Length: 282
Image (cartoon, rainbow, N blue to C red):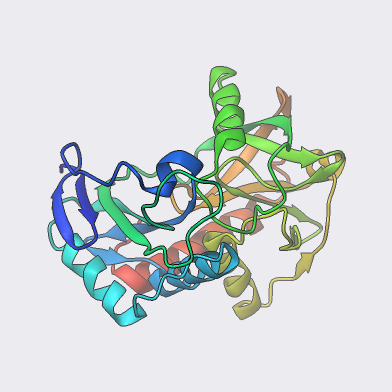
C-alpha cells in the first residue's frame, strides 16, 4: 500500500502533495496532531481521538471550526483510497499560512493535513526495554502538538542504545515515554500517572482505564517514582502504534514479570475492544 496524503480536501500521492510554504507548522511547529489505528478500513476509537484533537486545538487557541461530522466524512473519503489491512491515519491541524511572525494573525485559517500509511504492529508478546531520560520537554505536554524535538532527541538516544522506548522522568517522578504512555501494576492494582500538563492523555491508556472499570480491576491514579517503577510487578507501554506491550528491562536491569496473569488479561481485554470496534482480531 502506498502512503496517501490529504490537504484541505485534495487527495494525492504522499510524496507529491504540496502545502503552503508559509504554513506556520513549518516555521514554528504551530500545529496539533493525532494518529488513529485503521484495521480493514475501520478506525479504532476514532471518537476518542477526535475528542483529543478538538481539545488540543482549543488548548492551542487554534480555531478549527470544521464540524465533526464533516471531518468524519473527509476521513472516510481518505480511507476509501486505502488498500492495506493495518494502517495509521495521521491528522494534523495547523494554525494556517501567514507571513513569518511570532504573533499569529487574528483571522488565521487552519489547514488540515492527513495521510494514511502502513502500520505494522508489534507482537503482543514483544519484550520491551526502556532507557531512562530526564524529561526536558516544555510544560504543555497535555497538548498533542507537533513541537516534538525533545521527544525526537530522546527517542533517537533510546534507539541508538538498542531500547524500545524512553522512560521520561522529571527528577524522581515518572511521566511517560517519547511516544507512549507508561503504566505499572503493583499488588493487583493498575497505577497510572495523573493527567496533568506534564502528560499526554493517551487514548490507549484511556481505553485500558475503561476496561479496568468494566472488569472490576483496581486502578489508582497517582504520581510514582522511577524506583517504584523498577520495583513494580509489571510495567506496560501503551500507544496507538504499540497497543499494549510489557516492559522487561530498564537501563539494562531486568524488571517486571511478576504478574503475568493480570498483564496478559489487560492485553486481551484491550484487544477485545479493538475487535469490537473493527471486527479484526489482532
